[in-house]
Image (cartoon, rainbow, N blue to C red; front, side):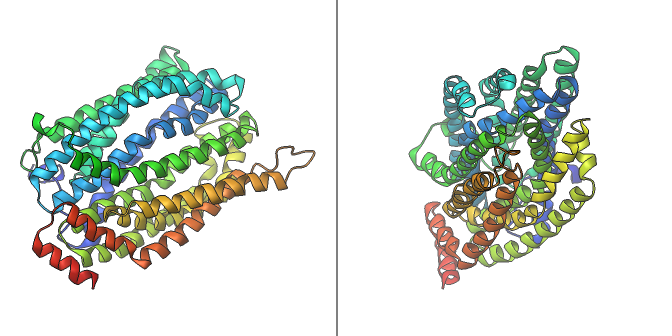
Length: 479
């Protein structure tokens, strides 16, 4: 009983063997991310099985727009996680309480903005992307339901980010597993049982996400030994709100940049027809699972670094960065190998169409090696973000996505146009993605080794009013 209780406690990552702390934090978070990925995957499987390939294309085409309009939550979540980790590491109860309260209020404001903007922007965006007439109606209904019900998704992402900042990845995992099971059951009920189609999938998702958000909030209300969740802390204060936005905005902008690039590339993807759109959806679902170790280790490194920066343990940050990146590389290499070996079987889960399975497997083979490069990018970017340097990863993402991926995709498409292929070779979509991933790993490594993120860490310590002893340690480390 004592062992189970310990799993639900906040974890202090400023003590103990770094790699053990990182792995112990990453495993439940990885399982949680797998569960979260099941939302989209189950949606695709159920829609493809009970409605058809066109409906599968509709859900996939809606993805980039969904991501673009949810970047506010991603930014707040990242800023919250960094500040919570640093205040927790520095054992600053009052500042931690104000930070969490301000995160909750900022999320509510963001939800209102998203609801209003989505109603106005969804249809024009779909038309701008030349979404095929055969699926545009489904895309619109799916997106409107998802955005109007975004309060559950928003608060789950924010509150689980706070829990991770406290080192508690296990609670978020349990609550997400509950929501995932509920989502699968509702998918089958709404789509297979009631014939609600694409709209049924959207309703299932937002209900399940709302449940996970409520469970996360209940968990936070019980952590009274660490911080206070009282009305006086639920008031926006410039000091905390600005710091959350300042730290989170670059991450939100990074996701926005990525999503806008995806929208531009989605327009090119749409030009290759419904079958290629469906293949792209299948690949992105498998890609979601392949990327999970990278994202999980990246988030773990952010929390690990944030807590140790808060505690002034800078040598420990460097040690953890090396160990965490190596473990991420080994994990991702193994998963990439399995995807290459069992590619056809994975693609066959989503559709019985042989041509679609073959096309998806061929395209997946192009980008496979890129997952290993992303292990480096995500781990080292996590270290920089945890130290407070969220701008460097943003600029790297901007460069590799906008200056590399989009021009390479359209360039290859243009150069390979023939009478038989009026839009060029469809491989351009995935070759461009591979190029951006490989270059991103190289550039991220260079900036990490240059060490500019360390200076951000020192500035961050001043921002959270570190003790004079910690400030002296930071100065010695800088020298």
